[in-house]
Image 1 (spheres, rainbow, N blue to C red):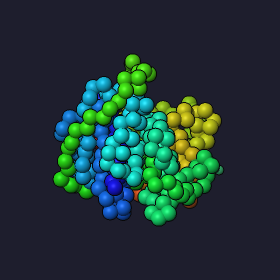
Image 2 (cartoon, helix red, strand yellow; image 1 turned 180 degrees about the horizontal axis):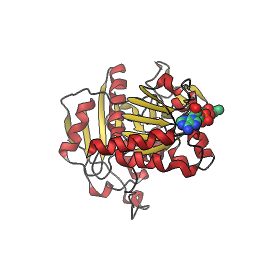
Image 3 (tube, protein in one colour; image 1 turned 60 degrees about the horizontal axis):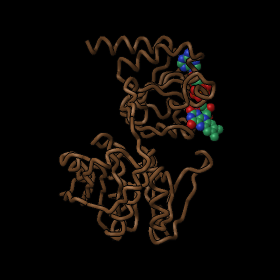
Length: 322
Ligand code: FAD
């Protein structure tokens, strides 16, 4: 018996979300008293594969084949279920990102495995196997029991964090039998968005809420974000009003993020907002109301008007840089 984590790469590189997946699955494998196998599909350098050992991968099995460099969910699912059969794996875990969402259901069907998507934490119970996930658009948590012998999980981003657990990792090759017909659908071109920092991966985030009063007032937020090299984010009413795009909305019903620094400008700190930022390492709040709930979760608080404080912060960061 073993546990397999599928480690997606982006142009041959892993991201923090991959290491979070490995950290999570290592802990799960420990609970099940078994080994963790991490499967990498597509060309990835030996040194990059080795980095998975830092987070507890006992064995890395690599399919270093250029044919697999572009994600083809049917072929990937076939590879994962073949390896799962070969290694008699009982649990397969993936990140709940676009690839995990496309592949996990296929693997679940091929392996006749029960599946739960966007799991929030380690299983609450192993026998029976019960996991926790958000339900009703994030308004509540559900406990879901998987009764099948084999199980497929996807884990929600930023739900677990990175846990270093250096092991002496072995790197092995794998050559599955994959029919050419599975490559019928191909992504022929990918365009990378280069001008914007991706919120869910950002280390630094400048977020703003209704305290900004109008979408025309977002200049100071963007200027501070630019000086810091930070992503921008917002509270839900701001995106509901159409002041900012929904991709910036963080919280219970938006993105869950875990940056090193989160600056909350004119955000009250409602519980639904805090649900998406509570794993931030350092929270700085700017609010005119000293009683605003955001100060209860902030590491540093500035009582003041955003239109006054934000430009001063930008100036101070510019000066410290130069
Ligand atoms: P407000 O609550 O209006 O707060 C504005 C703040 O700005 C106040 O604290 C005020 O003192 C301050 N302020 C005003 N003027 C200034 C100024 N000039 N300078 C500095 N500070 C100023 N919300 C989310 O954000 N994310 C979610 O995912 C989410 N999910 C939800 C799910 C459900 C089921 C429900 C019911 C609600 C959800 N909400 C969510 C909404 C949440 O309850 C709050 O209403 C929302 O977070 C408030 O947004 P806000 O802080 O921007 O606005």
